[in-house]
View 1 (cartoon, rainbow over the protein chains, first blue to last red):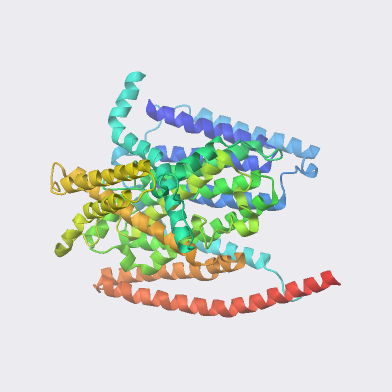
View 2 (cartoon, one colour):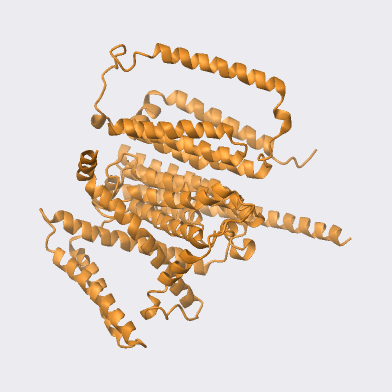
Amino acid sequence: MLDSVIFYFFAGIAVISAALMITRRNAIHSAVFLITTLLATAGIFLQLRAEFLFISQIILYVGGIMVLFIFVIMLVRLDVPLPQIRSRTQKWIALLVALAVGVEAGVVLWLARKIPGQGLIFPNPAPADKLHPNTEELARSLFGSYLLPFEIASVLLLVAMVGAVVMAKKRTDA
Amino acid sequence: MLHSILAFVQAWWVELLCALLIVLVVPLIAVYIALVERKFMADVQARPDPMRVGPHGLLQQIPDALKLLFKEDLIPANADQFIFWFAPVLSMTAALTSMGAVAFGPWFQVARDINIGLLFVVGVSALSPLGIILGGWASNNHYPIIGALRSTAQLISYETTAGFALVSGFLLAGTLNVRAIVEIQRTDQAWFVFLAPVGFFIYLIASIVETNREPFDLPETKSELVAGSIAEYGGFRWLLYFLAEYANRIVVASVGTTLFLGGWLRPFPNVRWLTWLDAAPTLLLAAVGAYCVFRAGKQPAREQSLFMWAVALACFVVAAIFALAAPFDHLPFELMHDGLYGAFWFLFKVSAYIYVFMWLRFTLPRFRFDQFTRLGWHILIPLAVINVVGVSIALALSSEFGINRWVATFITTIAAIGAAMLLLHWNDKYSAAASAALLAESSVSEDTHAG
């Protein structure tokens, strides 16, 4: 009972603020609602006992990336809506994409109508209070079984960062 | 419905009580930290401190807070109403929420045994600057926006530094759970500040930055930006920002205390001949009470000396509670004993940490913004990374090759200090060149202006 109340609380906040985020004219208001959406999603992670995911969502997205977004929005004055990006053709393309996504979501919902009934069997479900500590398990799989993909992703990010710094650097000569 | 609420309260009453205590008591503590700061500042600047309201000015903060409560609630006409209203609430909420996982004693903790422990405190308290940034933007004024931009740059620059400094402590602890971290410091017979002093030093600097204290108070800079990002705020909204700032200071001090200074442990908990330190809480409180009795006779008015007597009595009562609890350090009274003494030592260490903050505030001049970012990016982040690598090497050496942990960490600490010296040396050269370039540029622009 309490579990579902908590879930619908967070899910409701996430959905409502996601809708508000795309309908606000003011870019900072959109950013604030995006923050609310991310926090509510983090709450759902916490309810699923994914504690580490919860806190990394807050630290990385809310504390890091959103602060950077707001920084950029404040600097470039996005709060004046640009008329050129609201052309007529774009509306039709947006409608098309929205329809495609809607159909996709509908198909997924239709296929998933049996979950969580007897249609799908979870392999060895562990009771919620007997789960292994989340952080340790995550570290073990990241630095154990998935070490190579993890390192490749790190190198990729490093390359992207170096590239961004090189491109943004002030050119002194020529 | 009522039944399920009652069942909930019955299952969680300790946590609810702790949360209620935090919400009620932390603002009061924050207000009195501010009083201490005012007195300390007056002492440093050799001028009189607040002495009139109550004996020794002990009640000064209460009329100040009441004044703020009764001030007109002003929102600038061109401000963004919604965010202007929302931003201080966000700051305060983040600061108080992050206290939920701080262990003020062996059992005084709202969220006990959560796996991410200290990371929760750090992550949630990092949302507090978001309120400052949004408030600065919503004020729709040049100075607050500059303050907000500075706050953002500050957050981005020093969040990484603080994170890496904490990682060096987490490596030593091997866990993020707050209670486990403190217990490991007891079983290892060492506070982590002795094993990773460079990490603690970096965290100290980063925590000053995160709470916007002088010498790093660049988002506020009273002499440059009026009051920076909160210049348009007044009355109760300003009070919320103020409380959030002080609550955040308590939070960062708690994190530093938990991870590096042994949390609620008594200094040297395993040394037999230092057990007399257990009497320190009683003696300290009794000494404060005796001082109050001594000063009571010298108050100018009768009410003030009566009040002083009341304060002395309160001190003696608490000292008596400590003294009475002292023999009960075994079951079934162990919880009470450990809770009392743990809370004392924890708050004592946190107060010392905050005192160092004030001390630095009155000692050092403010950093210029470019100096400040250069300190972050050119010195502290590389140093923090080097320190993490060093601590990992020391741990690997001690676990794989059986080298004494103290020796290994000592060697890596020396290496980290050497690296810091090198970084400072290179930065000196660089900053001299940069300052010269800046000076040349500014003189050129002045010339064209004059022409």
